[in-house]
Image 1 (cartoon, one colour):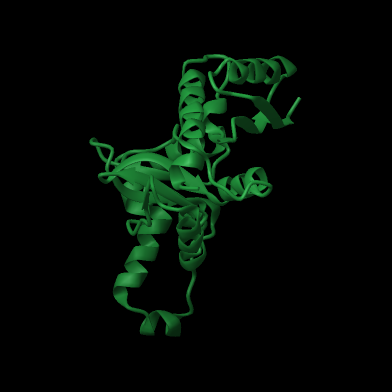
Image 2 (tube, helix red, strand yellow):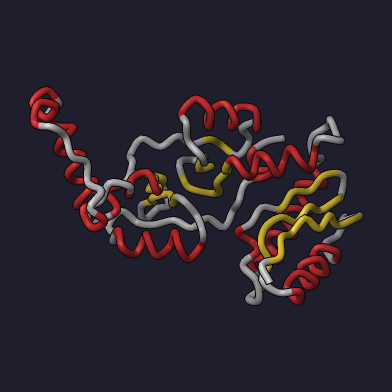
Length: 224
């Protein structure tokens, strides 16, 4: 399997001049722990995660060093810590060193990147532009849905997934397009939270209408 088979395509992103307060609201609203930072051309230039917001002056969690520690720390590090704690714009707080991958990157390589760099997600780019994101949870979902099948998804599986995601993007009664969908041997695996029985039923119905679908694996988690 490759990144394109499991990545979330409807990615919440922010601009470098957005306010930190607005980003905090986005994280809470979408129940996510990080957002890619993109410029006006959708090029990925950074990522802002919970880790970047842990030590903030508003919550009185700003880093405090003993005087003798500050005496040996480089001034650049102390300046960076101050900016992280007090910055009000995204570009002042974000991590600029972003680990990215392409759509055709094998999931094995994605897993290695997550482990090696101790990160939870990898933005997926095409010519530097954001097209998706793969998180640890997406890899677990892929594992769960493919363990009985040693072969990867076929071209038709990928087309089914693209068709389903496109249909989801046009539905105003659900935001399920932000949650991962996996297709294997024509079976659509639906993951993630649903908020009403009606939404759950409609999602299954929508998936059943996609050409090539042979069955639906309803693995959705009700929050009602």
